[in-house]
Length: 93
Image (cartoon, rainbow, N blue to C red):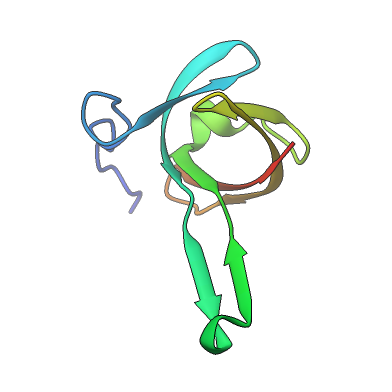
């Protein structure tokens, strides 16, 4: 049985989403720039990512350009989850 949940509310910039620019087109996605520390702060990491509908993000490949809040990023990796949603890990361009 296919997953048929309507996720459009989550990807609506008037609700939870952030507008990002992909190849000159504004797209609503969830943006996260989480920070993690380990070993009492000896190791830290920031892995910005976007989550959005796979159909919207399917053309993006590693190295594709994305602008979020006027900051230029490029796609480091693409992770479709099989339910119609993909996570793209970003790195600053």
